[in-house]
Figure 1 (cartoon, rainbow, N blue to C red):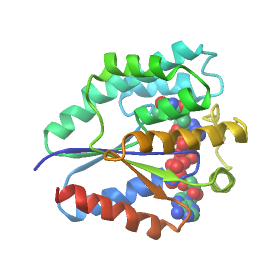
Figure 2 (cartoon, helix red, strand yellow):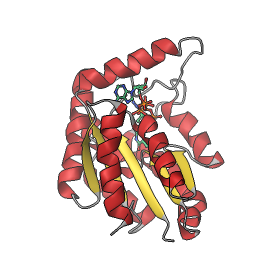
Figure 3 (tube, rainbow, N blue to C red):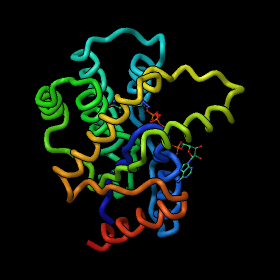
Length: 215
Ligand code: Z5A
């Protein structure tokens, strides 16, 4: 059976992690082997880079350096985990991938989209996900969900908050960025209305998954 690489994208609290687990159950019920992973991270080396990028004391990177760090982590992730697993017929589901760099560093922070594309070409060539879901949610709703989640988990201090401290206008640019990516690549990127409940969102996702499996 053909392996697949599927990514989940979207702003803070959009429900990517929740839907990644639902997707895993869906494929496993069909007898498929699934690997859930995330970016930045996913391999021991890339998780070390994650700590530099997302933790509040991880360092003050220039935009160019930050872009290279995201792609350094991504190359390790793709070469040592994603490609080998897909070659073995497994389904790899990643919570974020290159579209997050385009949306956060490019649309969000204003880093040159052409430079991101050049670095992407050097790092990944023509490798890309078979299918990407952008979970789309009004910014306020995403932040509300994310804050509620943190309130529940308030026992353990969360230091992975470097991007979450950004203002509302940043999150609006981010949302616009993800929608633009989907507009440019409608075949690969599917926008899912994430305002519904978990089951409603998954119903839309599973429709796309079924089409992919029977393509
Ligand atoms: N970043 C970057 O800048 N550039 C890059 O290239 C990459 C990343 C790859 C780490 O991301 C940070 O790195 C991220 C972008 C930056 N910064 N931010 N923000 P992360 O993926 O580790 O963290 P995150 O984006 O903040 O994810 P999250 O908070 O884990 O959100 P989520 O996975 O989308 O949502 P969730 O955990 O599934 O759900 C959030 C809460 O909502 C939870 O309580 C759920 O039970 C609830 N939920 C979920 N779905 C629903 C529905 N449908 N209805 C109601 N409630 C729901």
